[in-house]
Length: 235
Image (tube, rainbow, N blue to C red; front, side, top):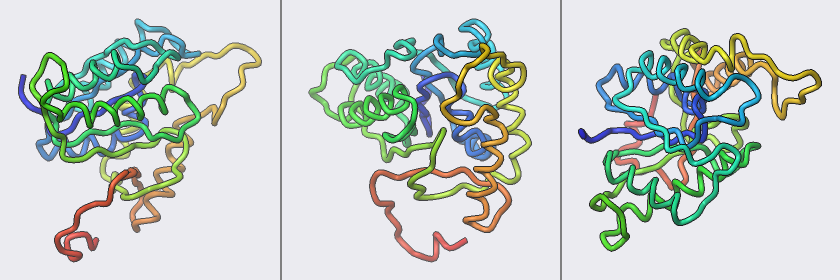
């Protein structure tokens, strides 16, 4: 299998699209090979079901121009940081050999999102160790970053997605059971907003304003970013 430039780990199908579909679209157009590994099937989701979610993920992947998409089926609502899961994720990193890895942050309302962060953080380290057991040879990823789903407490950098905002919306609408035709039980209480598309629009405008553009997606860098020349980072 060909090596990837970017590998994104998503706790549930649609998380990667919510957090960074615009950036994926931009980078794929520039020639980057990008893959998404969904950690669960989203089987506990209040809206939709596993079968529809899988079909929607396939359509979203096509729209995004992904090089690959996989699902590890580690258990929605049961995602934990243990040795077995660490090995599975470390082997995916070794198998696909990305230059950069993305995952949800360690602060989030959903426990699966925080568990995913712990898992990928551990696997990021373990994948590079030659003596760590596994089916694939060791691989060192250059960097790993966090994308946001609910809250954006720490934003290290923002990508201008103004030119692909409409495409991002179409990608999200591929998840019809979640964003277009979603039905929830009477009396169900959302932890956050009931309208993700409206929330994402507000987030994108807020982050875009931070860098002087219409729309943006924010990311957190757990480690300092290396800069050779300050002029390279001036807009």
